Amino acid sequence: MGFLDYAIFDEIRRMNSRQVIYQFLNFAMIVSSALMIWKGLMVVTGSESPIVVVISGSIAFHRGDLLMLTMDRDDPIRAGDLTAFKIESRDIPIVHRVIKVHEKSGKDDSKFLTKGDDNMVDDRGLYAPGQHWLTPKDVVGRGKGFVPYVGMVTILMNDYPMLTYTVLGLLGLFVLIHRD
Image (cartoon, rainbow, N blue to C red; front, side, top):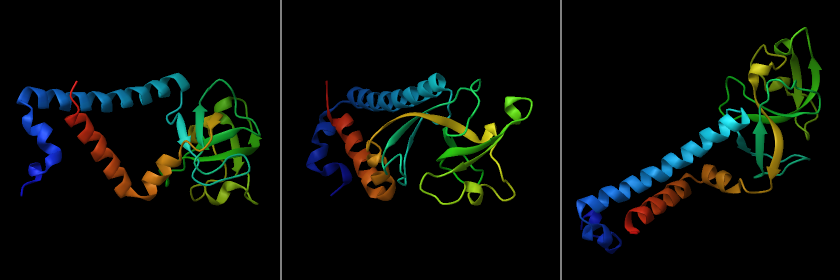
């Protein structure tokens, strides 16, 4: 019994080649639309990562909260700001609060120190080896709002990769089988 012999693929077998191509193009349009929305958010917010999911909880946020980030280069970073920053050895941005700021003549010369709300010590242990302060180039964005628990779907998909493949497979299958 071949892969396409299952009853679920009867609809695809009934389609002519033009309809199959049309369904694949529909699927490609959905994927490209999602990418365009993400890139549009990047342009509007000025942040390379306009939306992040809280992976570990804190006083201010819970695991799974969705944070909206903006990056206004003209507005200097101040103590108390919630910042998302990237460390060169980590792929995922870290979102912590700024506790100290050292400014020189220009805003690009400023350095700052962060700390997680629930942590007892500052983040120097998280920074790259030899780095004691963050600079504006390390910042991905600043928190401007959040939506509670919406990011749990992302966390579940990261924790259980088979769930991700199953959901994507079912969505792709639905797009291919569904005719309009």
